[in-house]
Amino acid sequence: MTGKVRHPGVIMLPGGSRVTDAVQAAGGVRKGAALGPLNLARKIIDGEQIVVGSPGPGVVAAPAPVDPATAVIDLNTATPEQLEQLPGVGEVLARRIVEYRDKNGGFRNVEQLREVSGIGDRKYAEMREKVRV
Image (cartoon, rainbow, N blue to C red; front, side):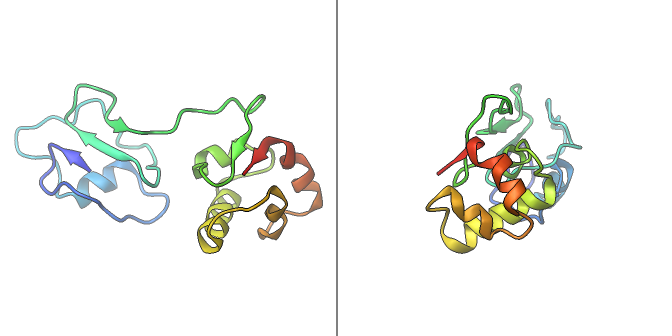
């Protein structure tokens, strides 16, 4: 969190937190400052930098949306939101994929997806051509 907040810096928040939670955790907006173009209701993404009071979009290094029809997603760098664009992957399964990646130091091959709870043969068959390592 940076910009016009009382306590800028790295802020740890639970998954599912929103921009408003990050602003509050940073002590709120400084007196007399404007939020800028921030969407306070948007869920935050792990690793993003939120800029309060900037004339720009308010986020630095936010991942670009992925076209699900043509995308091949890297399992070792994808955000949960990008993983949710895979067939049959929702918020919970995306979180499990990220947890597996973090716990095991990343994926060495696509077949390791089968080790993630909730990914059976059928779901793996739908996903395997849309992911890489």
